[in-house]
Amino acid sequence: MAYAFEDIRKVGVIGAGIMGAGIAQVLATSGFEVVLNDMSAEAIEKARAGIDARIDRLTEKGRLEPEQAEAAKARLSGSCELSALSDVQLVVEAIVERLDVKQGLFSELEKIVSPKTILASNTSSLSIASIAKACDRRDRVVGMHFFNPVPLMKLVEVIGGAATDRSVIDTTRALAEAMGKVPVLAKDGPGFIVNLGGRAYYTEALHIHGEGVADPAQIDRIMKMAAGFRMGPFELMDLTGMDVNYPVSTLIFEGYKHDRRLATTAGHAYMFEAGLLGRKVGQGFYDYD
Ligand code: NAD
Image: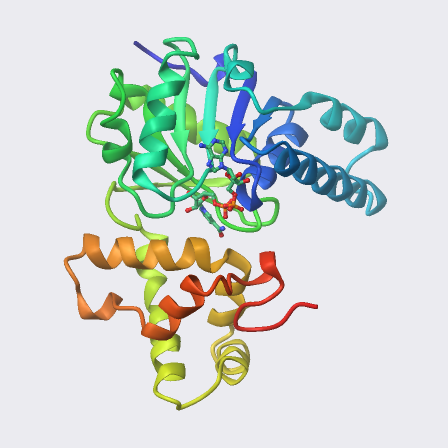
């Protein structure tokens, strides 16, 4: 079956967390109808309030006309029911980073959406082919990997799995471009390009901290002042959330067969286990009260 970007008018976003809310916002301001789904009504409500506030700020700054802002808000709806996604042409999944949960969702989605609906995952580290394994139709499963914060970050990695149809990859690239993003094709594998290449930024910093050479604030300051990064590794981990960063680190380490370059630290595991997740809970490597 051939897929075409011209067919995409309505998009489902599953997971109304940090990433899902950002993806839904950019889709709506780019002219697409959006249904934002989450199993938690509270998460949808919180995401909706955040999106409305960010759209209002864009209007105040003159980046959106008031009518465009109102139209974007009107294009976005929320629902806890997966059945609300029955008439979308593409789904972007942004739920918890667990293979079994994503596979369960993709298999459930196949019963709801049309055979012509593209199923995209925003996974950071799981292979697209492994998510697609749960589906009868694997040719329409694709990776569409956005970066945090979605409204600001231009890059989107587009990843085809072993069975992904070329027209699905092309349609996903075109959608990313229509959202004002720069799509880059990446090979399917643990961490794709960015999260594999960028892993050393975190692991090296964690080891320097773990060995007592410098603390997070010193390391962050040095990486910003001397190396020109916009955020230090610890600030970035707090922004991403340890519930994403730690499992992603572990999955990439496992995927690359325990390559020592990719090994994380006991301190990192502790942050995850202790629920010191970063900004989203008010405490991570830094306090956010
Ligand atoms: P998050 O914890 O902020 O949000 C996840 C949301 O998914 C929550 O609201 C939760 O209620 C919902 N959810 C979980 N299981 C669900 C299900 N079965 N059905 C419907 N909703 C469900 O997480 P996040 O940081 O937005 O990450 C989401 C995905 O995006 C993960 O795969 C992550 O690896 C990836 N990602 C995250 C970042 C980042 O910087 N945080 C960057 C790129 C990609």
